[in-house]
Length: 317
Image 1 (cartoon, rainbow, N blue to C red):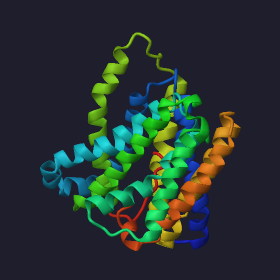
Image 2: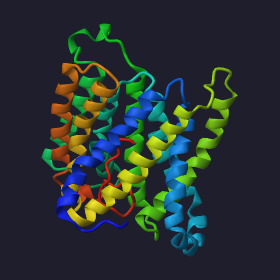
Image 3: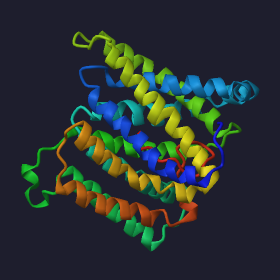
Image 4: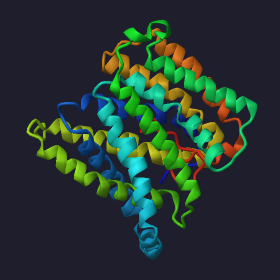
C-alpha cells in the first residue's frame, strides 16, 4: 500500500507494530463509563470492514458466490475473532489491568500450537511441550499475582479469566482459518470476517443501549472508536502484512515479544497502573515459552490472525 520494500523501514516497523497494538489496551482501559464494550468492538470492526472492503471490493464481488456458500464459516470466525477477541477483551478491561491483558494474551501462540496438536494431529516436540508448560505457569503466576502459597487470600480478577477465554477463542479463530481454506486474499477475507462479526455484535449493542445506566455518546467515545479501529486495527494489520513480505514471517514475529514492553509503558505512563514483580516473573515464563513453541515451522503455519499469512499476533486484539 504505497510502502517501498525497505528492510530498514521494515525493522523499524517491528518496533512500531507492538506500540500500535498497545493502544488497543489504552482504548480498552479508558472505555468504562465512556463506551460499552460491544459498542466499542462494533465500531472497531466496522472501520476495518469498511476500509478493507473498499480496497478489496472487486475481489469480493468476484468471489461473492463462494462467500455466500461459506456464510456459516464466516459467522463462526466472526464470533471467535471479533466478538470474543474484541468485545470480551474490552469487557475484561473493566477489572483487568493492561499488563495482565497483554501477558495473558501473549500465550495465544501456545494455545494455537496445543490446538494444532490435539485437533490437527501435529506432533509436538519436547521443547514445545516445555514451552507450553512454561507459558501456562506464567499465565497462572500473573492471575494469582504470584501468591501461590496464599491462594485463599488472592483477590481474583474476573477480567483475567475473560481475557484467557478470549485468548482461547483466538486460538480457535486461527485454527479454523487453516481448517477452512478460502479463495480470498488475506485482507479480503478479513473484511468479510469483520463484517460477520459486526452482524453478531448488533444484538449485544442493542442490549447495551437498552440499559438505563448506559453512557451517553460523546466525543471521547468517538475518539476511542477511531483509535482502536484505525491504529491497532487497520494500520497495524497493514503494516504487519507489509513487513512480512519484506523480512519474512519469522523475523516480523519478533514483534510479539515487544508487545509486553509497550504494554508496560502504556500501563505505567498513560494509565498510572502499578507494575508488580508477578508481571515480570510472568513475562520471564511466558515469552521464553512462546519462543520454544515457535521453533517449529509447521506450527508457525497455523499462527495466522490474517488468513493466508504466516502469523499476525493480536495482542488484541
